[in-house]
Image (cartoon, rainbow, N blue to C red; front, side):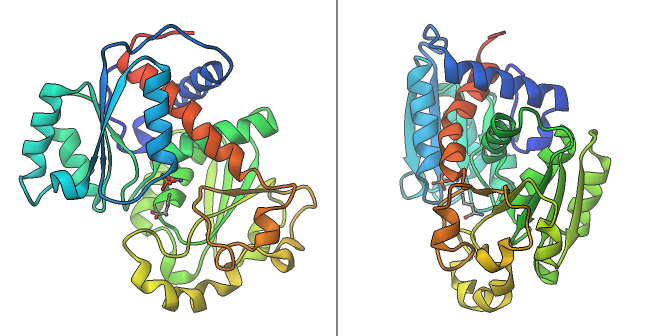
Length: 305
Ligand code: CP
Ligand code: NVA
């Protein structure tokens, strides 16, 4: 994986994905020598962040490296200068770039023109780093990933797409429940069909059906960053998809509750569900740090377990 761009979760093979999880688990339980001493990460954010920013910075710090955080108002990717120029300039000065962008094409252009690895820290299309933490969390709770059933209730968005790819590759059976016009598009479902792995992804508009035999249920915001102006409209459309006691009455009693955060209580999830004993949302958040450490170690060094 040394030197690899991580633009999509599908940039990994199933074996590599397992390797990232294994190294991340190891990093969670062990202190290591400053593996990335002298290495610098440039973090570029066109959108707000808490978990992604802090997990990348702390991960670099724990591995002995440095981080430079750059906001979009500072570098104005694509406005002050073309994305391809910024990519080549950054690559002359740092060892890895992680970027959170509006358009997925900004990430792919960075990846194309940078001679150092580029990590997708969330784009409109995917959130691969979130999926790493989600897999790590699921594996901690269930022992392994193969054969577990997960429901995702909400928009077929960036988080859902990465989770879908990861599920196929790791042998998870994922059912997405989503209003008709917000499902993962056919083109994504074709990509899913062509991925190697034992898992499966299906889509329905019936959330009670999706959760009926699920070991965990995952939700995300109804309006992602950049789409907040559609929230009022979406509130009507997504109302039957709220994770609440009524919906959860159709689920197994021990179902686990997942959310990538930030959560909007009263929209996609109720206060009592996110605060329930079955909620593992803060395990997911913590695992962002361990997954980031595992990923950075593998793409910036020859670390082996
Ligand atoms: N889940 C996640 O990516 O959180 P942030 O937007 O706060 O980074
Ligand atoms: N789908 C959400 C995820 C936030 C971490 C968004 O893109 O805003």
